[in-house]
Picture: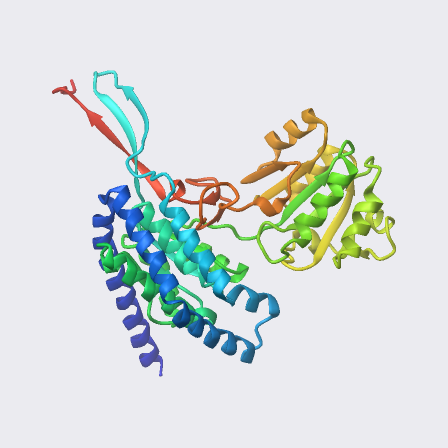
Length: 425
């Protein structure tokens, strides 16, 4: 049995490596493809998705039936579900990416070397991007579109929950792209749900240039721990909103309710609310959240605001609930708020609500997160809301890209040295 398992793993590894080599070959074609040709190919893919709506929705219905039979939660089923409106949204997102400025070939800067050569830094694609994701079939289209427009090939590995949806979307998109002259291997979906495929992708250094995981904490942890390929990801979205003493009460209440309850299952949802001890309307803010159906867990001072507030445990401050649950603490000023965030933030998105611009400027400068906001809901932590088109993910690391990652985040750069015959002494 062990020998059979080893043989199966070897077969899957060979499959992934063969797909990666084909993707790298196709990427060399994409790298030199004019912007207009890439945009035309994406429009063809969007048109193909619309034309194949009945087949895609039928495939999605099969996934939903399997998900219900396997006990998927209502939140996961909602992420999985497609309908005419959502499918049109996927097609429109592809068209949006096609209309974005193409970063490939952009000149970042130009200078003169001491020896007289001209030095140019120019944006280029990263190469072959591996995307490992769960549940959401729209990621298949979003990732493919962003990779293609930025001159990268994509090797996709979707979750088993959406296997039929992913295969239908990838097949239809591939047909649309091929009709517009894009190599079929530019966008590939790994045709097996064998878990060994993920391991093979993570070890494919030299074949895959970057891995982007999109999914739950266990998936991202595995990718970050096991990858021998650079990873672009965030682990948790433990997002904070700090309501300063000078916050407008009506604004604070509206922002807190929106940041938590608009959509509780997204990574930009607020998970901790920090209320300044000198803010005069803390009771009203907490009551609005409770009345909106949110379970509130707080420290001793937060519990004193409303008898419905439950005691928070030590773990609550480090928990990404992705549900209608919120931890609340009362803090003594902006320094205490920033200290709390420094201890517990996942460096995703943190916000301040205040009318005091000097305090806001301190918060924006000193809080070390990929996205820092002033007087805005953390639910805006999204590439589409930033005008970047469909994002491939949110990055919280310090290298390469941070925050919503779209076209520019999928490029690197090369130095071009333009001489006139210089030789070095």
